[in-house]
Length: 90
Image (cartoon, rainbow, N blue to C red; front, side, top):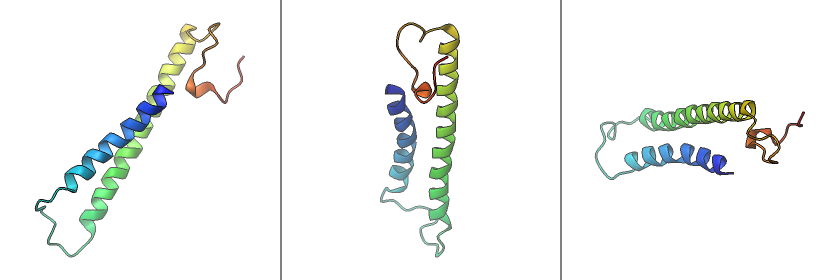
């Protein structure tokens, strides 16, 4: 459960930082422009961060789970990894 909360935090903190920076009441270089290119650039940047951090978090959790299962951490303890809840035990 704690890893899921960590993943959610990993996704939300960068988005909060980016929106906080761009939400300040200061003059920005593209403020006087008549196109929405800067707006969609910011939205695209946030989306790229979310996708990147999701992929990295999934890779990291999968690697740690495989490593723990290889070491026998979960055998005999009744504990199971978050990523193995849908799988049958062998």
